[in-house]
Length: 269
Image (cartoon, rainbow, N blue to C red):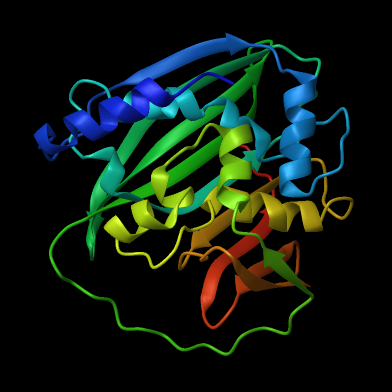
């Protein structure tokens, strides 16, 4: 896993100079092989079993350095530290394995308005021997103004399991993902951004949900998640899941919804 300290420093030092309302037409590519020991550490941190097949969320961390490089690169209009990860959609056309050489392509896309500001996508595609096998679309929100959405108060679903999350969960996931955003690592940094305590990584919460469903999912599927509210650390959340007509729903709750996800069949365009 690459050391991302310099990129985080760059994000902090250049954030106040970033202005604009267009995304640069930027993309980055990489060829890499997977470290089995790192996959095993990631699997343990997220609750997956150790197998030849990669956890469906694992390629996200392989592309994280390229994603951060784009968001700290020339022409990127927003301070990276102020962005909110609001959604993530992964489409796996087939499982990837530890032994396969992977080709990564990461690009910025689809800047569009949002009721609380602007949002855009970071798209990571993984190909093997020229054939696309996996695609990740992470949606980020750049908040502006003071618009507030009407707060919904839905009834929580019946819990399937309760998970207690330790204080150092953010550090554990940062060690395997490279995502060392300070809001996940200590309470003081989190308070600067309005959180009473450190918060769990959204991609850890998605991975943990999918790990709980391991063995019940097909080889090819799409999993679309909305991150609703941060999970404070330490804390506890209820995991719920239920089948749908052709897939499955799942969620994480405490006193409010934190994550809502849908699993559906993979569709190639």
